[in-house]
Length: 240
Image 1 (tube, one colour):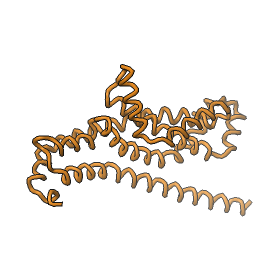
Image 2: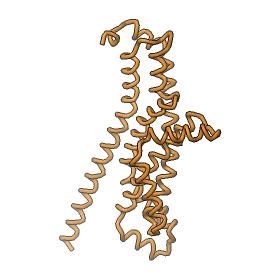
Image 3: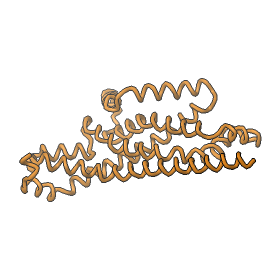
Image 4: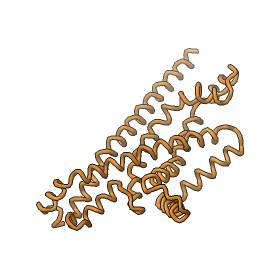
């Protein structure tokens, strides 16, 4: 604990503050591109799962179960070293983005599936009776209605993917955790362990806490709105 109150250690943090900001920037880039890939995979698999076609639903289920039941760290190591030993290394940052996207794509797929299944069946039938094909039903009728269900848990996925960038450390990434470790073990910056990791944790907190709060408020607001809507429906039924 002595290092936590060391003026010399905190001075090092201040002098090399750009190092931590660079790590935060790299973490944000990895999370952003990983999220984009996760959205592509998740929406596609979510549509597979609700397509009504058994082969597509099976593909989606196998992917989700396998990815969710194996650690991200293991997947990242496998992808990084498998590509490296095959002579097709894509670099640490790209490997990290692919790993994050593939892993969180499974969770986004479940969010999308649940959002689609929350839309009343009557909406599917109404869209079908109007002559909409499957793509038209989904993109014009169903998905727009499911957005309000999808967004709160999707914000939580943004928080999770941001935190999981720390796994890049195991393959020598340039994320915030990796740069913090390099800082505390550096020849000229070493020794400031407690302040460095505290600053790193605070940077994660400053990004993740507002997003988590947003997701919680969004979810509470949605439940209140549904409660009011349910109450109006019951009053209408009594009048009828």
